[in-house]
Amino acid sequence: MKKPSSVAAYLRAVPPAPRAALQRLRKTIKAAAPFFMSTALTKAYRKALASYDTSKGTIRFTADKPLPAALVRKLVKARIAQTERKR
Image (tube, rainbow, N blue to C red; front, side):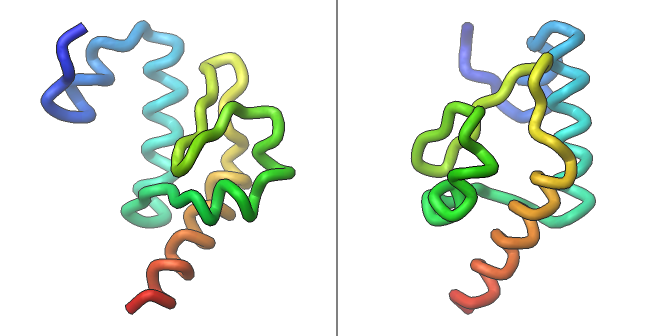
């Protein structure tokens, strides 16, 4: 698969079920803040993320086992706080 030129292009190439899960996740994140994960947060939330495959700043999930919205909100808020402390 050729590398997509944008998130929208990537989502168009994803099958319907996972696309819906990704779109819900994206909507949750965008409602909270622009967001990029960090290694420190994946370590800090290790217990909550134990059932997901993680590496550095990445959390891998599937359409049939999405990240819970409450966990996404916690991660986003923690990332915002982390970013604010660096300013």
